[in-house]
Amino acid sequence: MTLYELIESQGYLSLDSMEGSLEVHRPPSLEGSKWALAPGILLAALLTVSAALLSKAPFPPFTMKGAALEHPLGVSVLAILLGLVFGSTVKLSKRVKLGCKWVAYWLIPVAIVCLGGKMEMAALQGVAGKMVLGVIAIMAVALGGGVIFGRLFGLGKRTSYLLGVGSAVCGSSAVMAVAPVTEADDEEVVLAVGAVNLVGLIAMMACVVALWIVPLDASFYGAWAGSTIHAVPQVIAAGQSHGADAASMATLVKLLRVSLLVPVVIGTAFVFGRAKNGQKGFQKERLVGVVPWFVWGFAIVVAIKALGWLPELVFENGNTVDVSQVMSDVSKWLLALAMAAIGLQVNLKSMAKSGGKAMLAAVCTWVVMAASAFLLLGLLV
Image (cartoon, rainbow, N blue to C red; front, side):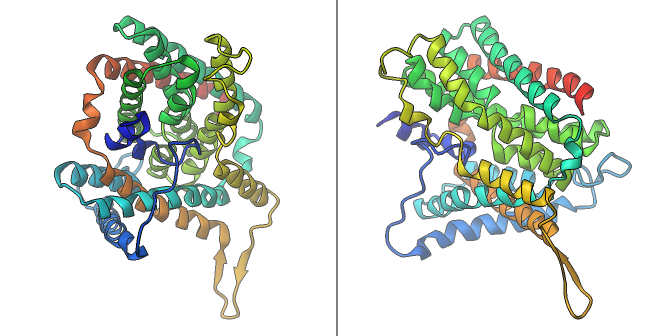
């Protein structure tokens, strides 16, 4: 069994989703009729509908009277939680998992691009340059925290570095991108991927719970979630618990982190002394496609929105349709469906085997990262 097969069999890859187009991010192969996808898609849709109904349940924690947000648990967050519970308690067939993989692979990029239609550039006026520097500073804190806490808890140098990179950039995409450069072995990579992805779930829930306690505005909360949560779909799900504006800001900040994966890989090559004469582990072709296509798609839609080219359709009967709002709604439901599908593919028992020391180091790294981001963003947003 190869490293990639091992990671996928443990259910780690599904949580990372479409954060890059490296070798591990390939579309699920479909043999036979397309109807083979139906069971997985239908199960994910059923959980999504259940999550939508549950999010409006008239009792805590789904409805919090007098809180900053009346319904703090968004549909996407509940969808992945229901999927996790179902996927960890019921043995699913290969056909069901195939449909779930298809949903996650194809719908998340479309959801991210559509979310760009709700991005208000006015929210970035005066803070754009500061935001970039702030995100880089937060990433540096995460990278340093991973190395320090990893070594403090007895992990190896390479495992600690992989934990830091995964926390700083984009989860297991970053781990898999820099692993060949660091010459990490299979055990070190699997350990880092498992810990980072599981802590990403914890980070998502922690940000949502924070909304129950502190009244955060959309721009600040979105920037905070986007700069500290590990995986793209987790970031958007957390953002949508506040609303579309927060989700747009969170996505923008998160995709900025994803786009910085290329310089991180190059920097890692030099740090580990692998940028000599094209040695194995530092190959230019591995950098091709590290920044996925939906990052550019999101940026293009944001630009179109800023130019005022997303129209408001007016019909003869007087009804109007705001295209940007339609795109936001489409994004919300596509993401919720994808999150349910992701949850169904994950077995928490196998993920929990990533190792106590690695988990503890990853949690401590995130706590420091989140606290630093909260303080720094308070000065920027």
